[in-house]
Length: 131
Image 1: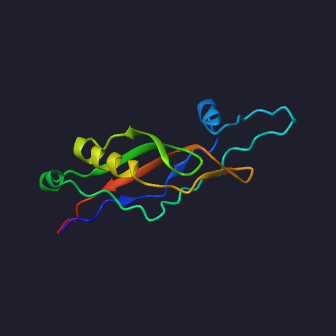
Image 2: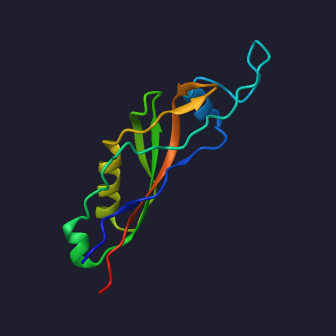
């Protein structure tokens, strides 16, 4: 019997890089009014997103692993860009994780009380139960 893939809490980018700051519509430097932007506060809530299905061929071949999916989100929590941050070593598992996460919705990141765009890393584990 296999265990359904699990998804750990998404890991938000703690301090936005220049690209993330630009994507979020801000920067880590002082703005014209002298205020310093704070890094986006981001704890991804998965909003009841289903885990990816375990690919049948991967199950038959005993393939397991952790996939890390990099997701860029808009200020509404919708996926706008997705990519593979780290492979499980099995193409089918990687594809299942990316395809599932692409359809997910997330709780938006917040900066200064307003929703902003952000990037997160989503770990997805595929494990077969040993009998």
